[in-house]
Image (cartoon, rainbow, N blue to C red):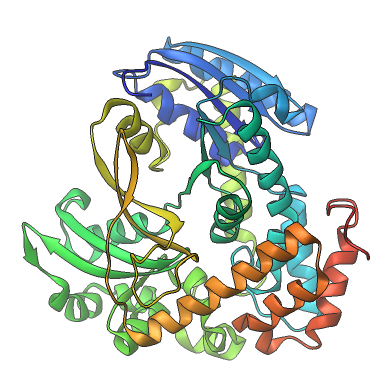
Length: 436
């Protein structure tokens, strides 16, 4: 790939306007090493696919870039000669997310997000893993040298499944930890984000910041005081309290972090903590979708163009640049643990800094995490192993074992009945091997 200037990108779940067009804009901004190529948009909804394709064409034309755009309802058509495949889909689309939460709530589950852990995260894994494994196996056959870049949730479970059941090169990305550090830089340390250097490690949506430096100086000892003085501790009270307890600051914010510590999700606790969000709260997500739709509408109406669209803030193109030009970078990624975090099991999925160059990804050695943190991460790692195996083997028993490991199962009335209800709701989206 070194020296290549024309690339073929495939987007699985291109109807996700929140990701597809923003990632496309990122690619278009990399004009110094990406001269052009092909953008292959894949979605099973032909109406949505057509809309996204038209918007992509306007965006590319506005940028004056040399890209061919093709659309496909069958992902296999997009595989020949592909260089990078982005996973940005949800099996069942956005509506399934709401259905997940509604069913879980009937059984007493408390979930603030429901896409990573808990019964909502598990059923999403059971729906999404068969898709990523099928696509990755087709990549093995047709484009064995391509990279799979995963943005779909539950991030860790999907990345683990690709690693375990295929030979495709892959990594998972999430903006959560970098965004948290940017907020700390701006709102707590009051410095430009690029000045606050950090390291973090853990599992997706529960990473722990291990280093904070400004100008080569350790500024972590100042964090407790600055969190209080800036008001940041009051805005993110769960994260601040977990920092006091465990000695490391967690990311990516209370709504995700709180799900790993379910006592924080009780309605009384949320009120008393002054949290600005609640369980089964889709208002922020609905607002994001409205904003994304408005951005696409303005683009199509020619009220805005490439210059106005901006970039996503995601790190995918940083990886692509390093792989293609040997201009190295260090970014957070989800990868298989191979001794990088010594007191977590090898073979589980972890999120940590990776050094990237033309030779690939080189995860950085973290060492040992505090025991309480390691225990929490280890549990999720084992849960994801069970979930991945359950998804591939269509095993209710393994899925139930995964659910029983999950911290959010503590509030569930009859976990087995909840699992059966979730499986029954998606007979049309799960593989035929499930006996429901």
